[in-house]
Length: 444
Image (cartoon, rainbow, N blue to C red; front, side, top):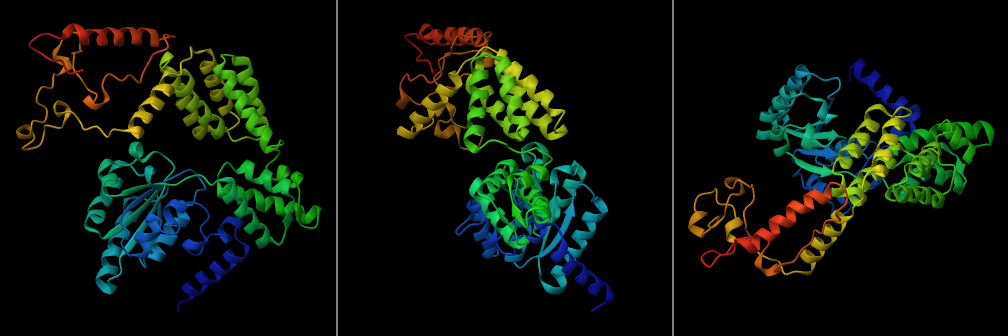
């Protein structure tokens, strides 16, 4: 063993004893992972692939603190693959080429395959991502990319097509409570039920943020209360940015925010938004609720509202507090001031009910894909009429399966911009009946 190996080993031992709590509690096996049971729990897809040595390139997409780095390490170990790590923030083309060369050499010398864990994969530009393609395609490298951003927008399509996308979920209250218990045991401390609830509520599903707060709070508790964590320790650990109310009041305030905006009261909407933020609520939680409301309660009456809400959500990730309060406030005022319609909500529910209750209707022949060889011989596409061939941009044609008859899912409210869109649609629907002739049965 070289002196460099000895120093590296000693450094690892010291980090294991004195490193951040989140690092010290990092799971050592898939059985110790908290959360993501749908992927790595018993029978989970990723677990089955790894333990069966059938792991292929994957993209792990999830919010901060959901366990992407931990899963990458454990999946490599479960597959008995050599693990290389790179961060797209700091790595360049030279680093990627060195990993590829090392993987080729390792495979030739020992027959051992290589996993490349690429954190923040969306930070690689197109040429850097393209450099990985040949090695991933031939199986020289098994890529595990991690990202908090939507990979459909941030990862090159060729690389995404050679990988399997897996969605990680933010940790729930029970899972976060389990981590608090482990952290307290590791630190030799205890906590009141109220302090544990406060820790969980302030984490917003982020395991790393939870353990970071817990570590500081434990230090304060050891100095003040003999290692007994109370609410003041948690509050001070987050500089006062925690939920001072209980879970019931938290959900009541969130409900008040939504109902105020739905009721077109911008003043009340702003008040409840500020109450939530001042109590330490995550701005991401508020932003998510606004994005949902934009479709659920405003919808087609003002389609721009969804754009405004989504832009506010992205701004929260980009600039954070306190400045993000401005973008959230703008979204609240816009949504509250917009005309309201729940027609999208009711249309979705009706369509889902029709699908779930059956029958499982087949795609009409004129709507089927006619681009592959032999499709026309099967009658696919026959009778389809191209709307853009008509001056009006619309043609009388049936798109629903015959089994559903003349069912209607979407009924516009007539509020705001939906009124003009509804008028056009109604005119188009009336045209179906008017277009019927003795010689031609229209497809609607």
